[in-house]
Image 1 (cartoon, one colour):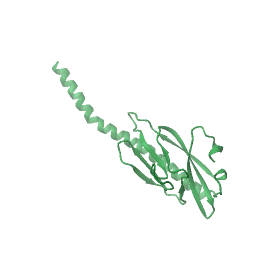
Image 2: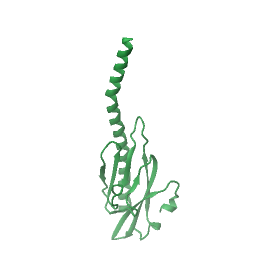
Image 3: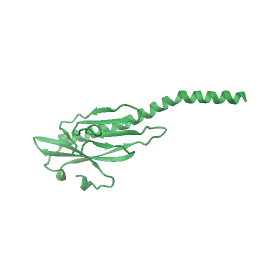
Image 4: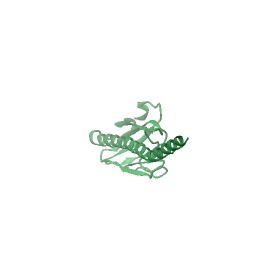
Length: 163
């Protein structure tokens, strides 16, 4: 009986020592997933701005679609509270930044290094639900003052509807 109690106590102590490391690894993995998505947004925006011509309307604009995968909470990944393109949730849009946070961590802001300003017509594009979400980047405006318009593509939307 004493062996059983000692074994249980050691198991609980080991588990208590390991849980913070597992939580840290989960957060680090989710941060890396989000950072890669931000890098893809940055590259696509720079590519549009440097290789395409701006058009007056989104219907004819050069576009790029970026798919962002938000992980579910699991043993290997933490679920983000949000990822917002163009500013903080419920804040003003039109910022060249992506903000994100995990439920248990402070909000982080990552600036986008784009040669044109960002415009988010309906405020920041906020992603909260886990899974794959698509955003559309379009180069719109006059040739001397183009802007990168960022919008969320609803699930199942056709490519023609987002361009």
